[in-house]
Image (cartoon, rainbow, N blue to C red; front, side):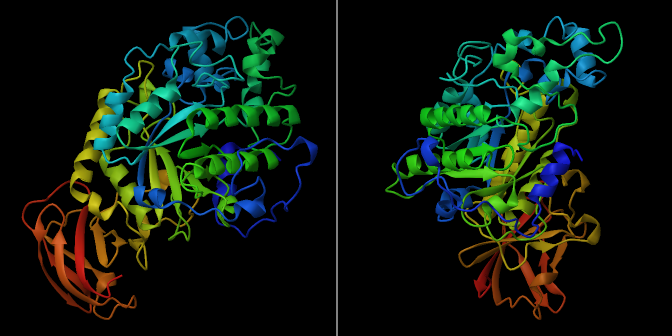
Length: 519
């Protein structure tokens, strides 16, 4: 039975009983060559990995999902979907370019010129908005590298804008003091791009092969002999030769830029090859940090992260409880790749703030994608969302950065409580209100967020009642961030706070509680 990518990731991301992972093994005579250090490319060895404190403290990162598909400005997965007869992107391609048997995705790459790309300016905006790390696209499923790749001539230095995108982003991140990440989506490319080898099923071009079927174009589109119109999100059918090639490409990326974070769009791929990439990344980083790795790798399979190894990433979703290990949500304010039709429909600052606070209260980080247009400069609506986040962080970031979860993540009415804890559940979320409460801690300080401003100027925090089952100690002082001290009482109904007449910000509000035995 074939299942969709969304369904596959949902199944992989939830906390199901741990599957039996492959045992420790020997590489044999074809062992991938990796940097010497504390790890080798086995699950047993990588169980020793510890998530670095910088990631646990950072809480918020920004991602630029940007590449040749952005030149078309018609949404994500364009390079695949344009070869699927009847899809919206196929219709778009026919209207703007022609039939994919005569002209293909390869012919759109020169349209990506990045003429307004200013990574230093953008990084300054992201830092001001509170991002502690930034992630560049490395290579998407379209098999196009955004650096001067040793193993792939289809890259941004030779084609399109003819610049080292990853390198420029890293230089800007270092200048502004942000940790630097890179995303890898390459592993499934042979299956993902196989649609380029298909043909129309009906109409005047029925049976005429698309340009991906031409052997002269295999270096971009791959050599898959099967067309996966219903894409199973797994490794079945991917040849050994591609696995080795993937390893060399991603190792080259790590060697060039030595990222603080490497993101994988899926589970750790290709077992021994994927585990060797983790070991290589960690060992190379450890050599720069006194033998202790400060690098992060993310996987979308929960089991990969249960015992050391890496960090779990949940795409467009939030886990259903306080996760025992640090984790990350990756999501976007619109489509992953830029889509001009999303203007006016982006996530609002309110939606982003709700997600950020909720995720942090559950021991997670939020990595938020702002897709760049072909030009390389954010559009006006994107800047408005970014500005709203900036204003909120200026008041409330103390309750976000370097915090850890409390005894419970918070309290919500049943209608807004997430139950599934899986990828792709964010569409079910509703805007939070003053009835939604979230908690974080830092040392002996307890931070309490109420997610809307009550009309009567009073808020009650029921989990902090005098007879609370959470064993809350003495509350001696309550401050509203952005305002100062506020009056409060406490009884069996909860902590009751009288708010000032003027709101210190919009969206969510932070109470800073001091006292004894609060955390």
